[in-house]
Length: 122
Image (tube, rainbow, N blue to C red; front, top):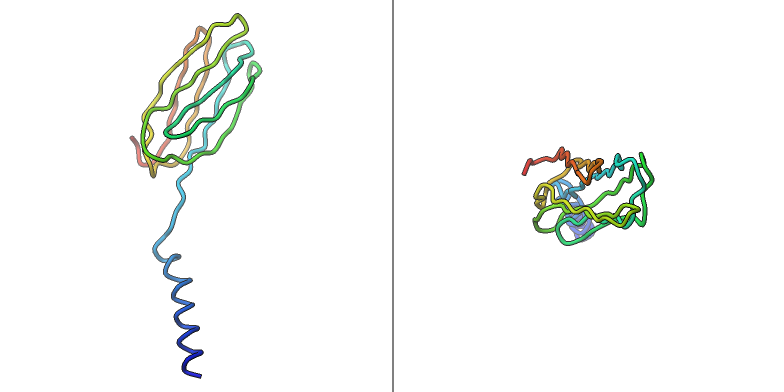
């Protein structure tokens, strides 16, 4: 009987300790807004150790993507417009354990606006 009690007690501790230590996943919710006034093609967003993108994004359309950061480095955006011109831009540096939101606005004339709302701030 004592053996069963101690086995149950140890199993309970094994389940409680991870909950107490606060294991946490850090996520960034990214939004890419096409405000260029035209369709874009070959959209790619690079962030530390990975990337995401789309074959196309219509004028006024929005794309959402959720990701985790491993390591640190800048956010980079690249896309093409129908006339073949490619736009490249570099945004803020992201680091592990940041979480929150990042809006990337693609604007007319090849301009890109990065609006981070991240904790802890970089």
